[in-house]
Image 1: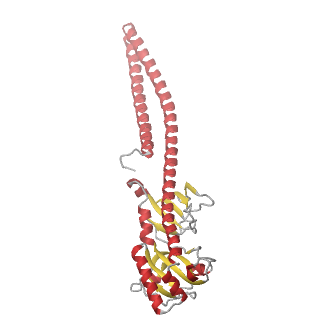
Image 2: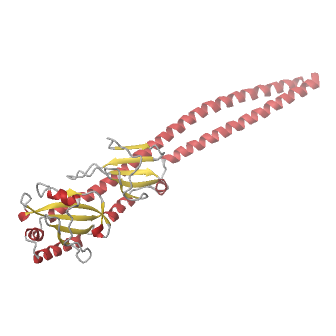
Image 3: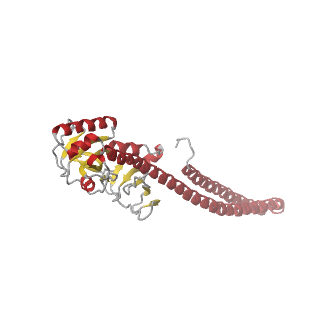
Length: 342
């Protein structure tokens, strides 16, 4: 939104300003009528002192008094009626402003979580495709040095083309890493990762058409980087229903990709001073944010069964959210796009 565009909050501010102007003008009219009453009273006193000579002036003074009373009655009515109308307009405008802002923030929350889901959908395709690469299949079937070294080369070629990954790991069925794409950078060959959720889920899958994904985590073997890991079983002859012979895990470089999504949310400069943008996982843990620390739990966030919403929390924060709708065959992980006041 351009800084020169009219924001509905500007209308609310203008309505409040009009209310103040109306009150001030009515107050000025009342001050004038009060002066008129004093003037007419003084005129009547002077007319009585003048006796017969002041009778004509007395009539004028009475008329001034009547006019001042009429003006006062009119100003009182104006104050009440105009005040009531402006208060209703102010309340309606404020409500409209909140509804409009809420709908806008909900849409932006949806946009954020949709963008990351579309990105991660590609990761589910990548891991299942690469698990059928002949070098990966051969090394899994017969993990001799020559075949594992060639698998490392193939994984390295993939990494050169797909810069969103930190590393790709090929593991045997005991969870030992037998090849990776960046052996010079990450000394992981020979390390055991059988305790990782993504590995456990991959070995339990029924076919090569399936994939597993872990929650956003910090991996110490990748220099404590934040990653989203997708995994798939490597199967005999690259056949999706062949015998399981290994596991391929691909480590998505989460932090810079999530930051790009967060920074890309189209808040105006004024809105950026008021709101922060977050991605929140199914357990309400913050996994990306323009303000909060990562992996903190988002307090007072209880969407229940609502897919989306905008409301005020018990601690006075305004919060808009939208749950992931998924993308294509990727159903998402129950994440939310969230925009909340700071």
